[in-house]
Length: 408
Image (cartoon, rainbow, N blue to C red):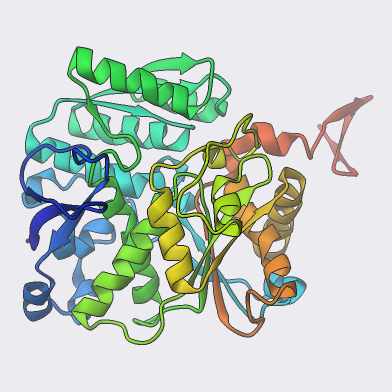
C-alpha cells in the first residue's frame, strides 16, 4: 500500500492534494510525490523486498499507485547489474559495472516511468494521454497505454529511429511525425491537450514518470546489498533518471536502508547537444537552449531539459560533474563494450563508456572506486546508427562484413 501523502512543487514548495490530476505548478515548477517515510519505515522492511514481484511494484509503498488493479506491468525493472572486468581493465577502472536497462519492455529505461505514469492515469480515470518524444518514451507509452486500454497520442521528430515509429504503430497509438525537434513536438502536444482534452505526460510535466524512474536507484542499492556505488555515469537528455535516482537515495536514507555518502552523479551528453555540460561548466543554475542540436543518440537530443535546475543541483550536491563526448567516440566505445562484455548498448549508454577514461584522466573519478555505467537502451533499437559502422559490400557470392567473409 502506498504511503503517498501529497505532491509538492520543486520550486516554490506549494502542496498539492494526492489523488487528483495535476501537471505543473502555477509557478511552472515540476511536482514531486512525497511519502510518509516514517510510516513506511515502521511498516516495511528491506528484508521483505525480495519477496515482492520482479518489477517496479516491489517498491509499491514508495510509489504513488494505491489500487493494486491499476499496477499494470509488462515486466519492467529488476534489470541486470553486470560486473565488467575486461572493459574495466581496458579503461582503467578496477570495479566497473553496467546496469543494463536495455532489456526492459520496448528496449529502454523509459518503461519504468511510463509504467508508473500510465498506472496513475488508470487509477485517476484519465482516458487519453499524449507525449512528445525523441523515440523511446513514445514506444513505452504506446505499449503501456495498450496494456491499460488507454488512448495514446504521440508526437515524434520525423527522423526518429524506425524501430520507435514501428513499435508505436504496432501498439495502436495515434502517431504524428514532426519536422523539427522534441521541443516542436512538445508545443503541438500542449496545443492539442487544451483542444482535445489529452493529458500531457511530457517529461516532468506530470509527477509520476519520475517515480517509476527512481526505482533505478532502489534497484542499485538492493542489487549491491543495500550499499551505494562511488559514482554513476548517466546519459542525460531530459535527465529524469538522474533526478529520480537522486530522489531515491534521499528516500533510502530516510528509511534507514542505506548509510554513507551518496554516489557522484555524472551527466554524460553529446558534443552536438550539451546544454547541461555548458551550464555546469559556466556555473549557471539553468541551461540555455542548445541551437542546431544533433547527435546519433536521439535520446540525448534534448536542447533544453525542463528539469535542468534539478539535474544541476544533484550533480553539484553529489560532487559529480558533466561531460560531453563525440558521436564517433560513443560508437567506438559501444563496440568495445559489446566485444568485451557481450552488452550491445544504445549510443546513449555507449557515451558513458567513452566518457569514463576521460573522467579518470582528469581526476574526476578514482580508478579504484566502484563505478556504475547506466545503459538506458538496447543497441538493436538504433540499427540505423550502428549500421554506419558495418557496411555490407557484395563480392560475388559472398558478403564482406567487418573484414570477415561469410558464405550466404
